[in-house]
Length: 369
Image 1 (cartoon, rainbow, N blue to C red):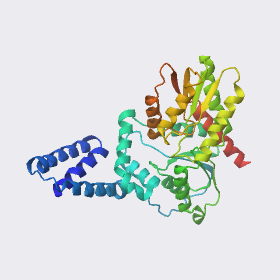
Image 2: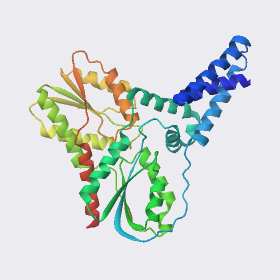
Image 3: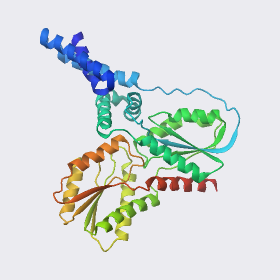
Image 4: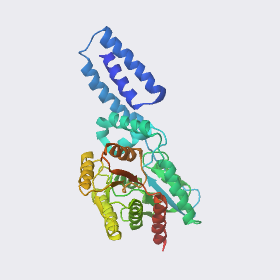
């Protein structure tokens, strides 16, 4: 029994760990397999080993690997006059970080993570293996830096993350300790979806009013940002007009991550802008959901082919900063799209960060009037 548990636990850990730890557990699993199956020929305990290992490793992920966020009571040293702008986003380390990803699983899935932990971490690990490294924090810092420049004196802009360091709560703790009383929290989420709900729950648990921090404003997500919808419209039309061909557009939504109603609302807005701006070229537009069913997207693409289009544009407009998860989903769709002679392209507006910054700047300034 013990060898079976060691065998399957080692296999599980080799799936979710990287580097030397992964190699150690591969060797351990190989040795256990040789001893249990080849030498002892003991097959009866294998099923029990699988079950115990599955439960045990998932519990380790849920309660040992994850980061515990503990807030201590702090006192400000001196009150500051500046307004603190706190950007909050998912957060993702440049390289695969098992503790941070375990923390994300804990907050996003709760007790369900005790069943899905191994598979989720394996998937995250595979995203990094296939796609390299994450640019999430680089882009988040680019947003912060440009917003600092736009706001100028009187404001301080700080990044914080839900599932990566510096964690949101620790950033708030530091802000209070430094004496900031006027705080504007900017969630960098497209809709009030899963991650926004996690953010709001954690924000409410802080109970800032009990810390004498009453002047706190929380901005809305970006699904109502007309200038962002216009940006996507302009980028799509620029590509279509350059090709001078009848084209199809897949405006793909994020069903699992986003608030579905708000996700659809934003994509419908882009569609309306495109249809109102272009009459000379025939453009067919579909609004499938990315995680809902890949076949849904393939089917949408095939339906567009019936109109005789020659170019298909794939757009995922309801993600503010792409994570490894969204990049993987988009890549997997592009790999599966096989439209014969039809050309297809993925559109991600290069000016997106500037537009996000402009949107934040406008909201913050209007709030101060």
